[in-house]
Length: 269
Image 1 (cartoon, rainbow, N blue to C red):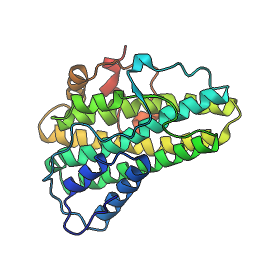
Image 2: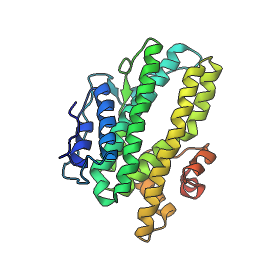
Image 3: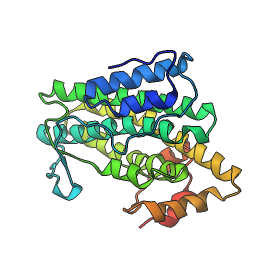
Image 4: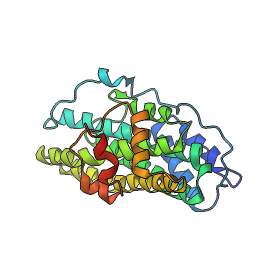
């Protein structure tokens, strides 16, 4: 891992995170870059082209979503390991999503945008570390099971439009995690795994802030452009999101993040 130095730009540092394949090295790079930004050691320049795809480790094997094996009920330890592995992969990809957002679109926003998304990137790295550690406690590890690449498909779909990226990644995909995590926590508790349940609650608290960061910057940008935030969000979701928004929604957690019903109810199927 190459640590940031005083001559680094934000763009170059973010690109290095994306081009680091090893999971442990990537999370360490993410933390180092976020720390360097906080300490004022990165220039607010975006002079490096972000890669089309991040570097990936040899494992896990990446499969299309429709070829992923069924996890089964969380009552069994095997199914809980599979669920935690799936969540670890989401957090691993989320590291790249945060740093790609900064390096690709940061020049369109003030430095406070970088502040927010550096914090998000560092927290995604911490979430991955927590989940990988829990997998090892349960006799497994990240990479032991296959995973799918749907999250990065959303990034590729929105690689030329900052508002589309904010709408799809934090305001659709991460918001969906707010909907399903409470039920997942209940299932882990019912299966006698309070340790994993506590960890998932902690991660969800951070994810509310991540959705909030996306929503705040989306609203600021659309208001500056004279657009109605909710209507423009709906337009972008219809254009760029291949799935559907399915209730039930965790309206309370979404509202904490500033993502109110007027954004998403009209899109629900």
